[in-house]
Length: 109
Image 1 (cartoon, rainbow, N blue to C red):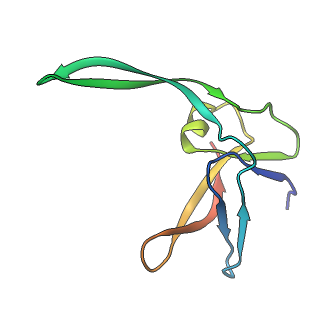
Image 2 (spheres, one colour):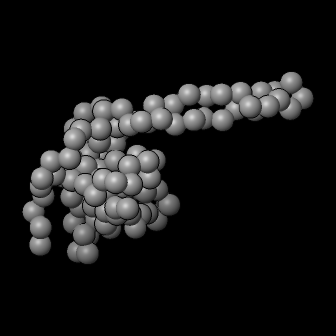
């Protein structure tokens, strides 16, 4: 078993639900990591603009540090395929009402 520091750079708590039902919560550590973005009008339909969002580089992404794993959004994970220190919540767990209560694991690229 590897012991890493896990830092949550999403805007919400991430709850890991263990096999025994125990929950480990990772609170956000600061501003969420985002991708720079720009909205561009590409067409028009009946006078309504059709736009595309073009994504750029990550904003607020720390340099990799040995022994540290960062929880990020799937958008960040997808944009940073060269990073093996980034993970996202995986295997979502829902309650009886269908609300997300956590996840069973963390996934990486």
